[in-house]
Image (cartoon, rainbow, N blue to C red; front, top):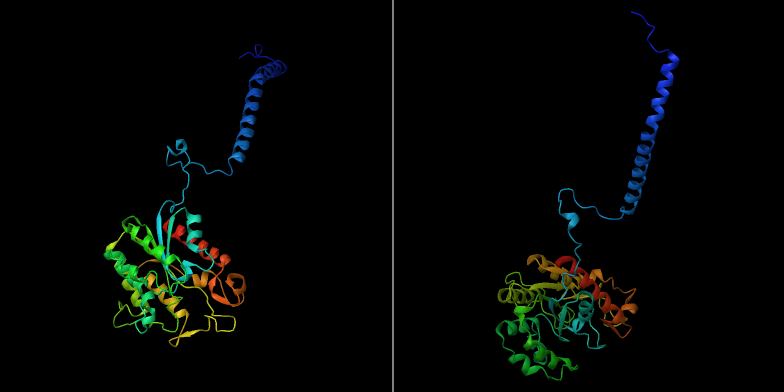
Amino acid sequence: MSHDNKPSLKRRWKRFRGKLRARRYIIIPIVVIVICALIGGILISKMNSGKTMPSINNPNTASEPEIEVTNPLEDKICVCFGDSLTASNSNKNDYPSVLANKTGMEVINLGFSGTRVSNITSEEEYEAYNAFSLTELTYSITKQDFYLQDLHKENEVFTDTDTSYKTELLKTISFDDVDYITLCYGMDDIRKYSAPLDDPSNPLNPETFLGALRYSIELIQNKYPDIEIILLTPVYRQLSAADPNSDELLVNDMPYTAWVNGILEIGKEYELLSIDLYKLTGFNVLNAADYYNYPHDIIHPNNKGLIVIGNIVANKMTEYFG
């Protein structure tokens, strides 16, 4: 075969260079487009680095509007029962107010100073206080019979003016509409006429501290099963700077903290939210001057101490019921 018709090597190189020049006008724009796309992708990735990307498993997620997170307790109704720690009549401030402000709940303060969970059966002078014990209050609420409270609401043992007002307020509450009840007792149960802590032979004995607490919880749950009950322990206390503090105090030959731990055990027993204010507040002999009406009253927290209590209760309730 003749090779005369084959182009020379030089001519073939010229043809290749010509084709390369022609294709250059196509390749260059493509390269530019690819580079721009890469740069744009990097910029978009940086802009979205702090955002949560929609799930690839849910094609509708990207088109759904952002859901605003709301407070789970907002507009709920909470009734706070307790002694002077709840009533806080001495300085006209109270932790239920802090609880209301922080959660948006409607909070009703039904704390009565000097009252206990159980009745004091050995002293007639405490008859008025007995009318506002937790056992009597829960019985009156479930029966809608407030004769006993009306009889004693203006007794001279109540130095504050809120007892009559709160008695009338109590009558107006529709507990079918109540969402939460807090029970904060122990400050006055652990005193000179303190009731026994418990009666193992009769767990519902209303003349013992824990028996009266169980009795009251069951009254509420049987009548109003939709109400969530929250138990609050008492806080650190000391009659005065010269007296033993609650870390050292013995009541009926048992430490003060036995009452605190008893409340926490009741919470487990009934599967209730129980808040250990004794521990969580951190109040103690070293910082009592900051959180109490020191040195003459190391039983009732001052405004600063009440704010601490209110914030703890609000945070725990929001976390638990959220």
